[in-house]
Image 1: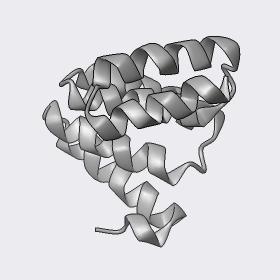
Image 2: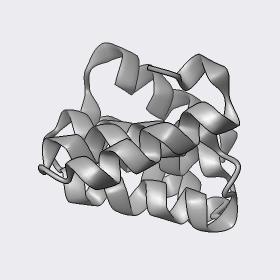
Image 3: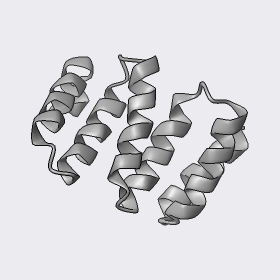
Image 4: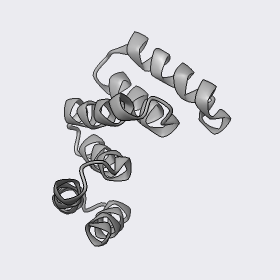
Length: 104
Protein backbone atom coordinates (compact mmCIF):
# COMPACT_ATOMS: atom_id res chain seq x y z
CA UNK A 1 0.00 0.00 0.00
CA UNK A 2 2.87 2.42 0.63
CA UNK A 3 4.01 1.96 -2.97
CA UNK A 4 0.61 3.20 -4.18
CA UNK A 5 0.74 6.10 -1.75
CA UNK A 6 4.24 7.07 -2.84
CA UNK A 7 3.30 6.89 -6.50
CA UNK A 8 0.15 8.90 -5.79
CA UNK A 9 2.24 11.65 -4.18
CA UNK A 10 4.55 11.62 -7.20
CA UNK A 11 1.57 12.07 -9.52
CA UNK A 12 0.40 14.97 -7.34
CA UNK A 13 3.78 16.63 -7.76
CA UNK A 14 3.56 16.14 -11.52
CA UNK A 15 0.04 17.57 -11.66
CA UNK A 16 -1.42 14.26 -12.82
CA UNK A 17 -4.34 14.38 -10.41
CA UNK A 18 -6.58 11.70 -11.93
CA UNK A 19 -3.71 9.20 -11.83
CA UNK A 20 -2.94 10.23 -8.26
CA UNK A 21 -6.55 9.50 -7.28
CA UNK A 22 -6.31 6.03 -8.79
CA UNK A 23 -3.26 5.21 -6.71
CA UNK A 24 -4.69 6.72 -3.53
CA UNK A 25 -7.89 4.73 -4.10
CA UNK A 26 -5.85 1.55 -4.21
CA UNK A 27 -3.78 2.54 -1.18
CA UNK A 28 -7.00 3.26 0.76
CA UNK A 29 -8.46 -0.08 -0.31
CA UNK A 30 -5.39 -1.85 1.06
CA UNK A 31 -4.99 0.28 4.19
CA UNK A 32 -8.12 2.33 4.93
CA UNK A 33 -6.75 3.57 8.27
CA UNK A 34 -3.87 5.63 6.84
CA UNK A 35 -4.83 9.31 6.88
CA UNK A 36 -2.06 10.25 4.43
CA UNK A 37 -3.86 8.55 1.58
CA UNK A 38 -7.13 10.43 2.21
CA UNK A 39 -5.26 13.72 2.46
CA UNK A 40 -3.41 13.02 -0.79
CA UNK A 41 -6.62 12.11 -2.57
CA UNK A 42 -8.32 15.18 -1.11
CA UNK A 43 -5.55 17.36 -2.56
CA UNK A 44 -5.98 15.72 -5.97
CA UNK A 45 -9.76 16.24 -5.90
CA UNK A 46 -9.21 19.86 -4.88
CA UNK A 47 -6.93 20.48 -7.87
CA UNK A 48 -9.51 18.91 -10.17
CA UNK A 49 -12.16 21.28 -8.83
CA UNK A 50 -14.03 18.48 -7.08
CA UNK A 51 -14.24 20.39 -3.81
CA UNK A 52 -17.09 18.41 -2.23
CA UNK A 53 -15.19 15.15 -2.73
CA UNK A 54 -12.12 16.83 -1.29
CA UNK A 55 -14.14 17.87 1.78
CA UNK A 56 -15.38 14.29 2.19
CA UNK A 57 -11.81 12.98 2.35
CA UNK A 58 -10.84 15.58 4.96
CA UNK A 59 -14.02 14.77 6.93
CA UNK A 60 -12.89 11.14 6.99
CA UNK A 61 -9.50 12.09 8.43
CA UNK A 62 -10.91 14.52 10.99
CA UNK A 63 -13.52 11.99 12.08
CA UNK A 64 -10.77 9.54 12.98
CA UNK A 65 -8.09 11.98 14.02
CA UNK A 66 -9.44 15.35 15.20
CA UNK A 67 -5.87 16.49 15.90
CA UNK A 68 -4.85 16.50 12.22
CA UNK A 69 -4.20 20.17 11.54
CA UNK A 70 -3.46 19.66 7.85
CA UNK A 71 -6.89 18.11 7.28
CA UNK A 72 -8.58 21.13 8.86
CA UNK A 73 -6.48 23.57 6.87
CA UNK A 74 -7.05 21.81 3.56
CA UNK A 75 -10.76 21.43 4.28
CA UNK A 76 -10.83 25.17 4.95
CA UNK A 77 -9.43 25.78 1.47
CA UNK A 78 -12.09 23.54 -0.07
CA UNK A 79 -14.87 25.21 1.93
CA UNK A 80 -13.67 28.56 0.61
CA UNK A 81 -13.95 27.32 -2.98
CA UNK A 82 -17.61 26.34 -2.48
CA UNK A 83 -18.48 29.62 -0.75
CA UNK A 84 -18.72 28.21 2.77
CA UNK A 85 -16.78 31.02 4.39
CA UNK A 86 -17.89 30.43 7.99
CA UNK A 87 -16.93 26.75 7.79
CA UNK A 88 -13.62 27.72 6.21
CA UNK A 89 -12.80 30.21 8.98
CA UNK A 90 -13.68 27.60 11.63
CA UNK A 91 -11.36 25.08 9.97
CA UNK A 92 -8.51 27.59 9.62
CA UNK A 93 -8.85 28.56 13.28
CA UNK A 94 -8.75 24.92 14.38
CA UNK A 95 -5.72 24.20 12.17
CA UNK A 96 -3.92 27.16 13.73
CA UNK A 97 -4.79 26.05 17.27
CA UNK A 98 -3.41 22.59 16.53
CA UNK A 99 -0.25 23.67 14.70
CA UNK A 100 1.06 27.23 14.44
CA UNK A 101 2.50 26.62 10.97
CA UNK A 102 -1.11 26.75 9.72
CA UNK A 103 -1.83 30.20 11.19
CA UNK A 104 -2.82 32.76 8.58
